[in-house]
Length: 344
Image (cartoon, rainbow, N blue to C red; front, side, top):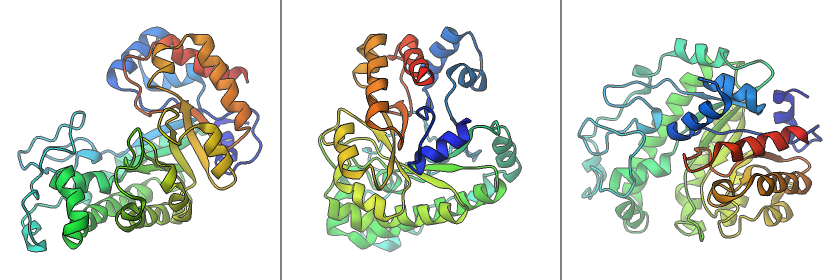
């Protein structure tokens, strides 16, 4: 099997020759360490060394103040959106909004002005034909709506001012659906999957009740998933933390796989997820980045890879349990993970 074939077989829970795998999108500091360890100076060469199966394709988004689509909204109206260090907790420009009319003055960005279809095509064409191409679209409408108000106020508005919350969320979701359409049209026939998502979980459980997520987040998930499926793409849905109580709703929304298995979060143990959901949805992750990859020795990491592969003969893309590896993960531990996958 090549990487693309292995990816599709894994997502569809068919037999594979070895586990599918994905490095993720390491942070700049982690990437520097990996380049040094493998003696390479670019991502394609690094991925050749690792032998993983998925190539991430990012949206080329460039406005006056944002160079990433996940930083497209200037919620603080200061013309300076930091894509790396933005926060959801600082009160946003709608913190004091009391009615839908109060959001009308915001300059909602128009994605067609800031996404170059030709650059989309170029990026899609760079993926090797034997690897799965996954668009990193995120479309994090829940997180953006939280940032627009400030998280505390946003969650309060879900209860006290639901129509106001929905009015902002609808505008954010409209932006992402338009942006995704531009990207999907430009890369038609080049993509295999898309990663979208919202962080809904903490280490111990969901940030809000399952009912609130069903009311305010899952409908947007379904719209984004349906849109991707119309283009024949598999949908990988990302949420950090403990989300086991909402997984049935993600399945009902049509999601093809969940990223990540954050194994140290409550209820996210691989054994439990296998027992409850393995016949309904696939997973990505499982190799813990909170403790194991940071502090474990290489044999412990190899052992974990073998155990996960035994537990999930298919239906699991083996990957670090967070897509953005941090610099505290030793490069030799990453090497042990992918070397063991390839041995299998």
